[in-house]
Amino acid sequence: MDPANALILNVDDNDGARYAKTRILQHAGYQVAEAENGSDALAFVMSQLPDLVLLDVKLPDINGIEVCRRIKSSPASAMVLVLQTSAALTGRADKIRGLEGGADNYLAAPIEADELLANVTALLRLRRTQAALHESEERFRQMAENINDVFWTFSFPERTLQYVSNAYETIWQRSLADLCEHPNSWFDGIHAEDRERVHASFNQFIATTPYDEQYRIVQPDGTIRWVRDRCFPIKDGADRMYRIARITSDISEEKNAERMLKQADLHKDEFLATLAHELRNPLGPIRNAVALMQRAPPTEIALQEKARAIISRQVNHLARLVDDLLDVARISKGKITLRLEPIEVEDFIGAAIETARPFIDSRDHTLDIVLPERKIRVMGDLVRLSQGINNLLHNAAKYTPSGGRISLQVEQAGDETLKIIVQDNGIGISPERMTEIFSLFTQGESAPDRAQDGLGIGLSLVKRLVELHDGMIYADSAGKGQGSTFTVELPVLKQDAVA
Ligand code: ADP
Image (tube, rainbow, N blue to C red; front, side, top):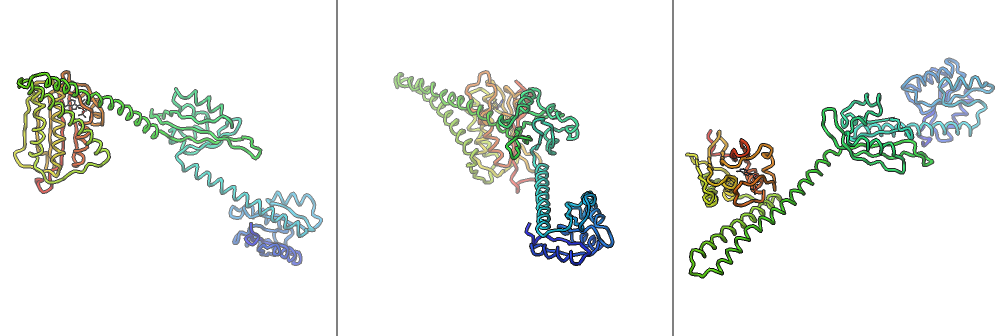
C-alpha cells in the first residue's frame, strides 16, 4: 500500500512520545491523526476507520487493552489493525494480555524508529494480502454460484467433498443438503450403465491421469441429462497436488443436436440411395422404348405411338423429380420468392386437378370434386399453390390401390380460413408415422401396387409452400388401410373475408 493512502491513529497521552512517533510515521509518508486518551481514540476509530491504530497501553481514562478489545469486538471496526505499544519495563504478561485483547502485534519501549516502521509496514501488508484473498474468494464464490456448471472441490488424496455449487441441484435434481450429508450420493444419480465407469475413473484421477467423462444422469422423475465431467489438479508452490477442482457441465442439448445430426446424416444417405434408384428407374423403360422405336418399322404406327407415350411419361416423371429437388434446395436456402397476388381459388385448384388428372386416371381412381359456390380469393402464388395441391392429389393417387376413390373438397371455414381437403381411401398412415411424414426424406411403406416411388420430399415441399403462404397443413388417418385426409388451411384474402 502506498503509505500516503494509509491513515494511522497515534494514541498516547505523553506529548513527547506521541510527537516522536508521529514524526517517524509522517516522515515515512503515512497520514497520521492523534488522540490523547481512550475515549477520543474510540470516537475517531468509529468515525474515520483508520487503517491502523498505534495504541499505548497506559491511557488516562480507558486502559489501552480495553480500547483495543472494544475496537476488535465491534464488527464495524474489527478490521482496523491495532499495534499496541507500552512503556519500558512492561513484562511478558502485559504483552500476552495485549495480544489476547486482540492486538495484531505488541511493541515494548524503547521503540526504535526502524522497528516501529517495520512493524507498521508488515501489518499493513498482511492486511492487504488478507483483503485481496477475501476479495478473490468472494469473486470465486459469486462466479461458482452463478454459472450453470457444477463446480466442486475435493481434498486430495482423500477425495473428501469440500465445496459444491448450487448448479448441482439443477443438474442432479437432488438437494445440496442431501449431498452434504451423504457426500458420495452424487454417484447414485448416475445412469446404472455409466456409474461403474465414472466411479472407477474418478477414483483413479491423479495429476497425470486425466478425468474427462461424459455420462448420463437420471433425475428422480426419470428425465435423463447428459453431462461432461472434468477434474483438474490444484497444486501448491512445490508442484504437489493437494486439491481436486471439478466442473460438471450439462451437455444434453449438444448431445441432442449430435443425435439429430447423425439421424439427418442417415436420412441423407438413405435419400441418396433412393435418389439414385429413382433417377435410374425411368431410364429402363425409356431405353426399351427407344430400342422398340428403332426396331419397329415406321409403318407400325401403334407401336411407335406406344413407345413415344412411354418416353413422354417417364421423362415427365423425371422432370417432376428434378423440379421437386430444385425447389426443396431453393426453399431450404430461403431462396424461393413467391409471386403473391390476389388469386381465385378455383384457378389454382383447377390447375392442380389438370396436372394430376392423367395420373389419377391411369390408376383408375374416381375423383370427386366439391368447390364452394361463392368465389373466394387468397393472396398467393398461383403456380406454387397449384403445385402443392397437385402433390397432395398425386400422393392420394399413389398411395391408394387402383380403382380407389379420391375427393377434393374446398370450403370456407369461419370468416377468414379457406380449407382444402384431399381425401383418399388408400393405404392410410399409422399414428406413429403421422409426425414424420412432413419431414424431408422420410418415406413410409409403398402401396402394394404402387406404380412409382418418390423421394420423400413432396410433403415437406407442400408444407413449406403452404407456410410461406401463412397457412398450415395437417394429416389425418384412422390408421393403416383406412385412407388418409390432408387438409390445407389458407387465409382468405382480407377484403373478401365475410364480416
Ligand atoms: P414420397 O411420396 O416421395 O415418398 P412425400 O413427402 O410425398 O414423399 O410423402 C412422404 C410419405 O408420406 C410417403 O412416403 C408416404 O409414406 C406418406 N404419404 C403421403 N401421402 C400419403 C397418402 N395420401 N396416403 C398414405 N400415405 C401417404
